[in-house]
Image (cartoon, rainbow, N blue to C red; front, side, top):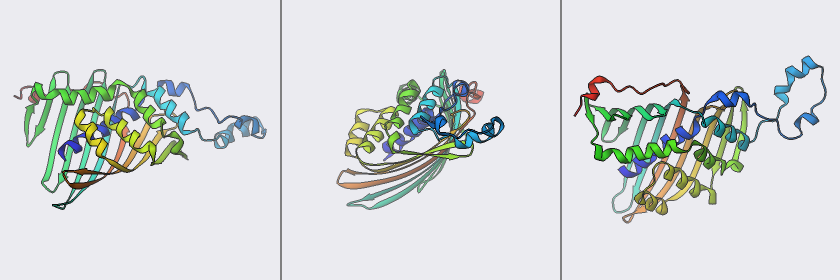
Length: 293
């Protein structure tokens, strides 16, 4: 169960990295109206046309919006992400059990170099845990129960590998969403576009496996995914109109698996918001953490 929770947290970070992009190129390339749109728009006086044209433009397709996000991601340097994750885990078999885990994450991430500061609060039947973590070139530091500790070097590799894979290819990560673009609906909501998709059928497990692997796949995770029966993945993805930067992502995943003669059902709901695009210059580790053993 702990392994599964860790994989999900890695996926959350990957989605945040994939979603975020820089607005420099996006501002230079406004969304192109759908083919034939200009030809069918009635002529109006210049002043009236200038006023009404934005309302008459057809909303871009999901493919077009995701392509703009790919372009924006190329020059992304840093961002902040806030996430609220709720997990319900039900075990049925020789011993029945149900566990609810609520997590709140507040993160700042730089991509060059790949570093992160993260505050995490987790509430479960075992109690409440609060943790602050710094992942930097100097090392990985954690604050729990008022005490700093440095993660042993031999334990760093798995964490760093997940972060490296997440940062390696934002274009590839958004391509994963493009694979389900035909299932996405686009809504125009004022200053943003909102893409929604309810993924099922053949696309569903392929998308979930791709996301998990991007989070840092290993043989154990691959074997776990083979046992998984993915029931549904619902995605809501907001994109700012003028910058093509993400505003928020909502993810709802329901999965089942058989393990050691027991059936495990996991329902995860995650709501994320993104901010401080290219505003986080460096992750600074507190002096008291640097002296931790």
